[in-house]
Image (cartoon, rainbow over all chains, first blue to last red):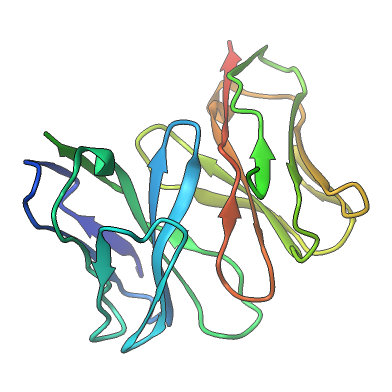
Length: 114
Length: 110
């Protein structure tokens, strides 16, 4: 069955370290998204991509970067981790530019920055 | 002011009760309206989707959209303990980005 996976599921890192969170989907979806979820804020969009070599900033992109070298993967990098980036991170994907609307979410990565 | 406002609750109801959830929004460009359900320590999953104003039913779930008031609702009839989750409203314009509410945590007591 097609799916979307994230790794690691839990990560503890120190302030200032570079961290990369992986996201892999097997639906062959063009669109991929990264969100962070914090109490009281719901899901906030960090970065998104509509296809290979395409990346765009979301509403909370400072301190984060992504790259899209193939259809299946959209890794999220925290350049220099800060305590404010302690959060639960979700990756999602959806079909290409058609009428499809549903985003499929991964299981999440719980990141703690100490 | 956030684009999408949702009361985070928490909401606790007895089994069999009707659960009523709602969101308001400020941007009239939103065209598509969704409700996602998220169980503890899981990713959100799509529950309901509506495009136009009006009602949509799916089993025990009813979604309502009132574009003139910029108000959407989700009703859960005959609630079950398995309905205990966080419910997030989400909206999008013509592109594929979603704007989410903060989520309402619901507990259905057996």
